[in-house]
Length: 422
Image (cartoon, rainbow, N blue to C red; front, side, top):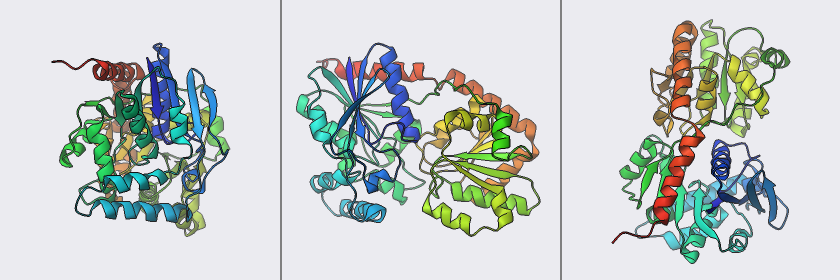
């Protein structure tokens, strides 16, 4: 079959959701299906508000995947303007009545992808399914939904939904506005990464026509660089270190990881924190306020290539992702593939991936004291960390692989394509 993926960004954009889309596309292509990914030109998150040329959509080939990239306009007011626009949408959705029509127009700036509808309209007539991704940047998702309705073909949605920690959480409000609820309820199928997402939909009284837990998979490990050389290059060859991978921001738990690491060192526990990923203004401000001695313990390395990243994963003492914005967390699988223990937040989709006390530890989001205690436990009980890492590796082998994911997705495709039963 010919499937169209519609996603706000696609690799080399360095996000877990984007890597998920690409890995699923490749798995379907390996099974003989044709996949076209329609996306933006974004290379980094800042492109969503700063804009990125060229001025017309372009066609490229990513192995067996045809990729159509549409340009991004600059958001008036930059990042601050985008955040204000989003806040206005949330406030409007909270008003009495159904605000879907107005919100759909406002969502065209989340992000401001240009020529998206024209690129979709130019797709051949043999497209059988439209599969949209990422409910938090819904412009592309919404355009895919309109295309499916115009062509009378099924629309499947993978929301990567973040429902936060309770109903008052801004993350939940960011994913449950009137127009988003309409998308979820009218999709032919909603494919969740974990059962936590399905529970979140129920709590918000959103009832899609069909739901399924699809999960995620682990890409084949790259040919790894010599770990010793990588450690020496970054000055990490002595002492234990915790590894954080993701956007280095408050929502991802990076700032909590910094505070927990400094608290441990203040209690004379030898530990360095290595942060890999895009930086943020909030982290830069906090890092600049640290003393020289504290900065030696906090090592932001930026975006690394896969070989260096996996060399660090193979040698770290633990992986940290105390985030409340992750619907899955593929980095957990990567750490487990190397037999490393993990610590996550009891928020978002993470509890649907990490089994607390079995293959990792979970702490309340934002609880620096609990995070430091979990880190100290893995430092002082190395046998426990080794056992958790091995259990995680076993879970990756048995549960989290792309063949399983691809088979489940195709099963759903076949169900939505089947003629309705009398």
